[in-house]
Figure: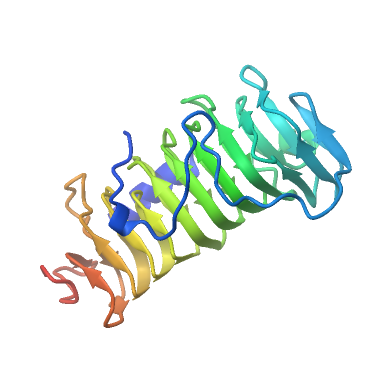
Length: 293
């Protein structure tokens, strides 16, 4: 599984998008200045904390809001969310420092680059920027939830964590890779724009529903429902893959030896409404399930 290991190594250690309207699973409005996601809902609860300064820490379990755009370029971290805390960006733009939002206390995140103890929720706005080199992420922690958030022009990664849940999210042109997870990733109404050298990666499982990706989708198990993967370097790379009402085509932009639309160790499962162009089996040859096999 040489290609799988290559993409995994890139994702764990550390171009403008071409979007075809017919392939997009959901409708978004993207503001040219702030890339604000339309239809974002306001916080259902009164705020415990108002974030007004870079590197501010939100206590465990608290609800925080951003009342204005906040520029944290030059800071180490924009916001710390202690375990169980949430941040409602309220449609505003948060400029990341080295990192954007870290889910964990400053001490915990200093001991562990992945803030292994932290879980948090970020919603309703945009996190932009981050350095192109060095271990940086727009959102980092253990158990991460993002709802109605646009991650744009981030550093090495948009998100790094163990268990990641995304709903109504746009990941736009990260420098290296959109996402790296040690555990399961659930993505619903997600757009991953701009091919990158790294992949939308999980060590275990990725479930994508009504989503669109221009980055390689890579995990031990990949399940696509009403989703499209296209224009990516490697398409879908997995031990096993299942497609329902989904399309995987026009990938292998790197023209590598072990890349295709579907690269799997087990025979991929496609229902009658799914489509792919090229498949590759690890033991050699194709699976004979795609139109050009």
